[in-house]
Length: 335
Image 1: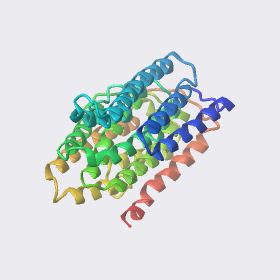
Image 2: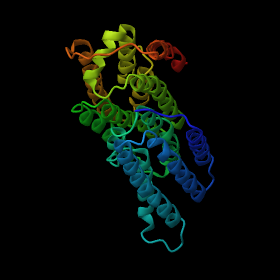
Image 3: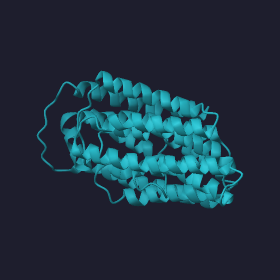
Image 4: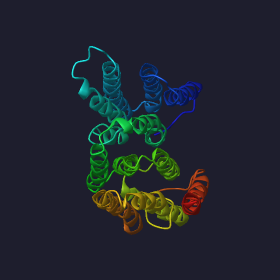
């Protein structure tokens, strides 16, 4: 799938960035809702950049899910402060459901893997990183209004569902979608301890790992895990770099992905031991399908006729640098 950097695309990207900044700096729910709507309308043209039927389907699914989330967000935020509100005690719950729906978090995740499997890798990168920034910030802000028994339930559900559902997938985009859901569980675990900045640090580390990974998958037009075998035929160094990035996402030491997870385990040790067990179990299932991807790329006998193109040198360099970063950032996070 191609991605054309036309003037119209640059305009939508600038609007996308501006709308997210507006949402992060909002002082009332109405302005926040307007910013989220602008963000939605800016992202739809990016989703449909290649004008394929799959991307059109994915953009419609994304629009319907986000429109439902926006409607719930606007209604619940107005009714929470209305003197004539019906069932005012349920409005915070509806508001939380709206934010979870926009974030693509379990149990409101039904649209996220479907959209990820239908769009290009460039759109997947934006959807998994930048588009999660505003909803995650809202969820962190709203943590003080949530029940302390509800946060570990959501965190555990994300971790387990992201692990279980990702084990039966062969499409790389779907696997990375469920991986993102699993990582949301770890981000929510910091909300239980009232550590909002740690949630954002975990999110930034996650983004630093998936962005180069998604970029190389876009350059090589990879769709399934078996197609990774062609990387071994072209560049073993690139294969090594992808393996390091995937293992870092799984959270194995001493890579970067392990450090925020270790901090979460240390902070939860005296607070909620069962939460630690659930998160580790989900992370182990994530490790299973990451290793499955790596093993498929090493032992597959699939004959794929590929030729080196002008992007391979740049992509190999990109992944080698990202792999070094994946290992080298670890001591910085510990500080």
